[in-house]
Image 1 (cartoon, rainbow, N blue to C red):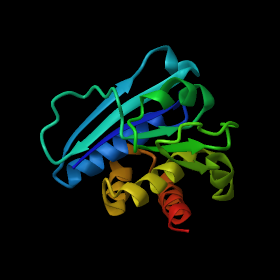
Image 2: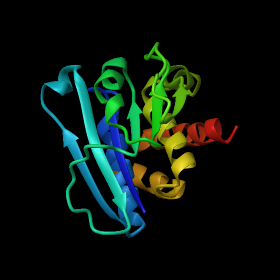
Image 3: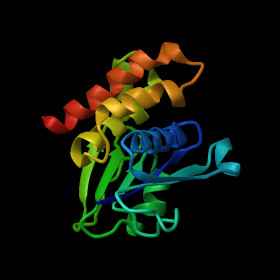
Image 4: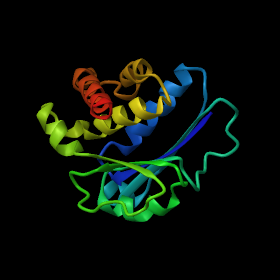
Length: 178
């Protein structure tokens, strides 16, 4: 089994931490993982992205050209990466910031109002984790408890944010169970 995941959005939306959480959770499960971030001017508000591979076999290359899953947090990211998703793949769209529908009919699309749901939880910055929760619930790429354990590592020094991130993860899981 292999999950090739591309995560994209504006710098500051938590794209890199989503990738780190997935990679760390995969390591906790004894899986083969890679996390490849894209840094540069993206950190100033442009499109930032990372790729994550979680596999049962060794990962030959961290480069993903046709992801099985795309998680996009803003419209420029959707425009840039939607055509790279392999047929039969899954796309998660932040419908709070993306006002168009995906026109591809060969992928499964989930629209999640990340920003509004995060505001309901009392922290506007956990929208990314809501999307991550939905991804985990649908794909079973890693166990939710390993994401929760990984929060302590990825959010090192920000222990006060673990509880709200745990709630956000659960909220995302609930969205796709309904």
